[in-house]
Image (cartoon, rainbow, N blue to C red; front, side, top):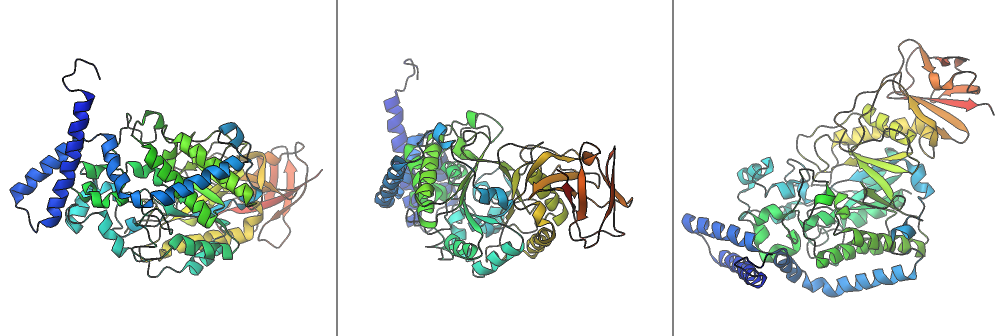
Length: 560
């Protein structure tokens, strides 16, 4: 600040401190008052908004620190253990060392996983899983919906949905059975979303599913059921974004400003993003305190200590500049902890949030244009509008999802397909039906998917896919001229993404004499195929009617 300014830093600090305690006093007054006259309420709102604007990031953070001080000892214990594990190696807390990790074969072989977005946000079942944030933003539809349906945010805040999040019909064994029948080889439930409400039994907060709402360790119970089926267990953490997720509540008269709820709503720092692109992390100057970063590290390490997940998935904000050092520190702990316990694990990241090779790249709702040398993953939602459950959502059909799986696998990737259960613990029937249809297809064609690796080229055909993140709504349908290739156990698999109406399939990538073929068969078809090679490709005479649905796999034996 220039010396010519009329207020010194010390003066502003004093004003900010005063404003903070005025805010606290006002909420104490509201708690003890039965009613407030409209004019007084308006005045109080104006004062609150004015004082909120005077608070420094440090003062905003202080309310949260005070609210969580009862967990300080346990937090320090976990952080101390984290540092001990890193010190014991073999991985150091630097990108060169972390990039030496290898992606385990179980993950490369798995190809298909289930993602689960569940939580308190499924109670209002409106808008999206970001309802918890949007209900405090006057510019969002969820704000008006909330006021009209539940009342003003001073009387009914996000915390008030928790008792209605009961999960009374949650059956972990039934869920695990469904995922197994769907053909999933790993499952990644969200352990904590942006709303700061863990679905596991955390010792670092009083706000969790184990202590409120369902009063059950939802993640832990599902973890047991999943592993009982021989399926690998993942965990997803979205807590980094919790630093600012409720900042809309800072700018209006809401329960977010009430210090007694600070341990749920978090710091709620005012977002400072100098770009319209929410993911432009290099232009994100939102304040993140050391206390919050260490709490994030402790909570994430706690998940590892308690549940030993085989995979950890992070949303995008761990790549924010202030966060990257803590993210790297956690990666060192996770890899070292796994090494100590003889466990092979995976850590997913987005954008450039980790050094190349230090983890597995994840592309949200998107695909890559070609084969990636390193393994990668795309995650997409089975429903069209939300990751969590909302009323009236629509669901993707099996065919485009199977085509996406095939395309991603041909390019050395995995597909992580998300579902959003209801607040009562049930999975929508439409989602279940699609999952089972995918599983039925994999039961016939799985040898071309599970354990496969890319061929010399990923495919052929006229359809150009939209690449990059957030492209799932602009994808074009594939045709019978589109093929994707994989290899497994000495065979090449050509997966046709449609049934040719001409009675013949022609695969140009198997033209003679460049490729010598010994035999061709169609998975799921018990009879011998007629085929021959020409200069323009492999010609296969098809059965009179389609064999199966969605996509059709030719197993090709090449001559040495």
